[in-house]
Length: 260
Image 1 (tube, rainbow, N blue to C red):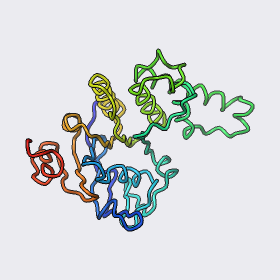
Image 2: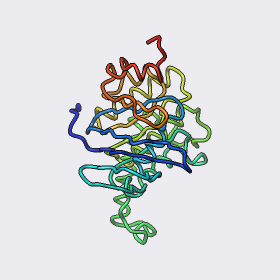
Image 3: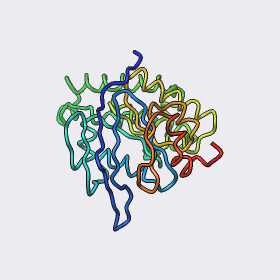
C-alpha cells in the first residue's frame, strides 16, 4: 500500500512522572504522526520504558495529558489504550511459555473477539464464524513473520530471537493502529536484527501501522526512524529527524560519544 505520513495522532503534553520523589519523567512533550516510525532513544535510566508505560496506561503521570486523535486523557488505562488500538511488545518477554506459537498469537486476538461467552461455550453461529475469521488472521500473521515451521512448537523451546518474533506477532494480532516496541532487538545477533528491522519496516509500510520504538542500536534507529526523540535522566534533550538528532551537541554529549 505504501505509506504517507499523516497528521499528529498521538500528542504527549508536559508529562511528568515520579516514583516516591524520584523523577522518572520531567515535563516531556512530543508527538507522533500517523504512519511514521518514531524512535525514543537515550542512555539507560533515561525514562524510555516509563514513557511507553504512560502511553499505554500502565503508569499514570502526576502531570500532563495524552491527546489521542483529538481526545484528551489525563488518565489512560491499559484497557482504554487497547480499545483505542494501542498494542505493545515487552522488553522482558511476557509470553505463555508452555503454549504453542499459534496459541500465543491467538491470545492477542482476544480483544477482537465479540461473540458472547454463551455462544463461545456452545460454539455455534456467530462464534464459530468469528473463531474461523480469527484463525485466518492469525495464520496471515504467522505467514507474514515467516514462522510457519514453528507454529505448533511451545514458545519456551524457541531461541530468543524467535520468541521476540512471536511477541511481535501477538501484538500484531490486535491489529493495532499504534504499535509500541520496547527494545525489539535487544539480545539479538546481527542476522536476527536485520530480520526484525525488515519486519518493522514491512508492518509500517504494508499495514500502515504507526510505530513508536525504543532501541539501543543507534545504527538501526538512524536507518529506520522518521523522527527521533532523545531522553536523558527523564528530560527531553533532542527531537527531530535522525540527521538533526545525530548532529545535536546535547545528544552527542549525553549519548553518542564525541567520536560522532
